[in-house]
Image (cartoon, rainbow, N blue to C red; front, top):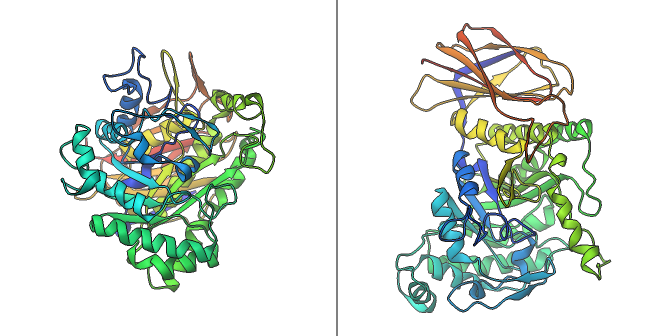
Length: 484
């Protein structure tokens, strides 16, 4: 395959937030995951230092919290202050200790160096509770909740810029699910009150690719929104934990962008494409495993609905299929970077996350290395590229770096067992080097004491226009071209 690109035709400047992540109060994501007081690997705030270091290495730009389904019955006020009472989490049917709340989350974001992105309760919650949360986080000293933050030992405002109204409130599985006619007015009134507290915040709201839902939302509340939130999981395994094999996952990669296309069309039809961007703020190829919770049938014993969640921690499930899919997803977001400004891999820790924790350390799953490649090696400018002889096995995106004569090409070889060659017709000078991940087979994975997927590197010397490179099977690669 020959890949051609025009360095003078910049399609979009990608927002670093498309490499964002998500964490929820589900199973071991928070408790026993990133927050583990008493563990020798945790710092003075109970946060796992090895997990924070891993997050910093992939430059997590934004971290969505606290949910997810959890948030739709969450009372944030019970998770701040000295006296915190455990409550029953009706979404996931476990006791929530409330020891990790807003202050701990903000402390974590600051240690990572990322933007906080708070998702509010639009299930059992209301506009006043949402706006009180903004007051707690962002007002200097005015009002009951700003003063409460100060009493809790946090004098300066947190300045949380990004807020989402609700999580999947269109779904029958969500606590406090709404109809389209209910959702638009609730978002509008909530947004109004939140913006009255802090007009500088940027708001998103739960949406999907349904015309009725989005029209009601955007007609009622579009003037208040900077973002529209969409979610997608392709391999649905909530009740079975059956993860599709490599070939099936590759089928999913050929139409990853269908939701973006539909939302773009709706925004353009309403003349909102310049004021509202897409936040793809929950995505993963694999749906989480939580049987007998979000169905009409409810598990009675913990062995029916709680114990099975441990099976999310089987590291052998997260193979090169997950890595290749994730790279294809990020490539599609880069191609749509003019309208997609944020995304959040769901989740970042445990469950289907890219970081797995155990008492004595962490495992970096295959998907982690995709984020390592993309955040550390790709440029911020997406360049127009095409192929006169396209290879359906190869997914490619060409990027450059603002203010530099430096280029980076993201390349995915979907083929399970065949190498594929690509020549790059790019008017660039410098030295070429390639970094890639592949593993010995499509089913390669990492586990405690087992590292089958890692980043490998090779120098190719001086780049020549039309230079050819060989892509390993089931691989994700980045070719960098720059002066040393």
